[in-house]
Image 1: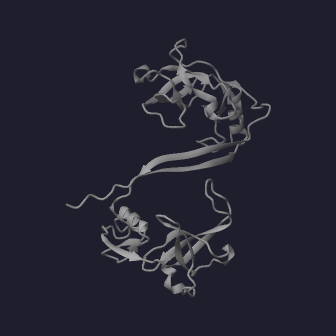
Image 2 (image 1 turned 180 degrees about the vertical axis):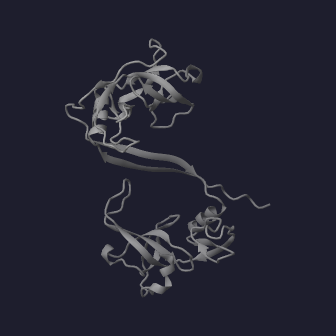
Image 3 (image 1 turned 90 degrees about the horizontal axis):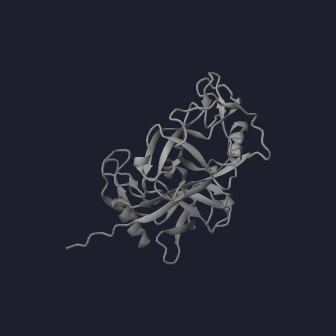
Length: 320
């Protein structure tokens, strides 16, 4: 009996810092949180929006009429989170809640610290639990907590605020991160196993005959399954490329370097690869390249010039 193929799994992380500057409204809102003040903005129709926005969502008019609202409010919608993920507001199970703060007409999304889902309900009165250390970010609100001393109905009138603070926050850096486990299917598994043997294998569409590398298990053009495996390369042609001037975190490659689309011989579309062994400003469309494998590497470390004459444009123009 043939043994079942190994099921491949790999933990993957996509992470990058998102940096943005703040306009006068967002700057005042985040700086206010640092000072334990919640600011909203009044629209032309008199509605109070929290969090505030710079333009009226109904009329697109510029908004600058800031007001202060209460740190207490009412839960309008909620969902229980039994297994918090790293980086979420609380490490123990909590509820995601939309809270309409007293004096506001819209709701703010945040976490509610509650002992269990039975303790949460629409209409629950809550208040802000401020973080011990605040720097001018939404995390200055550590979470919400039940506020049993408040009335069942929202109260409090918004108060005008000029938005002026000492040392206002003018920009933020937010880390975007996605953790997940990837398990390739039949086609990708065969492709990865072949790479471990220093071979590149694609799959041919039975309808249009295009060879997909990496294989996808189906032709996205014809919509039919692909099962015929075809070994391609190892050499190929640079079809397009870019020069990278920003060093990536944890990547031990000096900048500038070239990242290119490479059409391997016999393939019906180009794959990605780094070009080395040639000055970055000499890389060009049509350059013929070959793979370079690192010791014990499961995929090519980079591609280098093969020494062949450049490919004619007509041979790869359909692969751009």
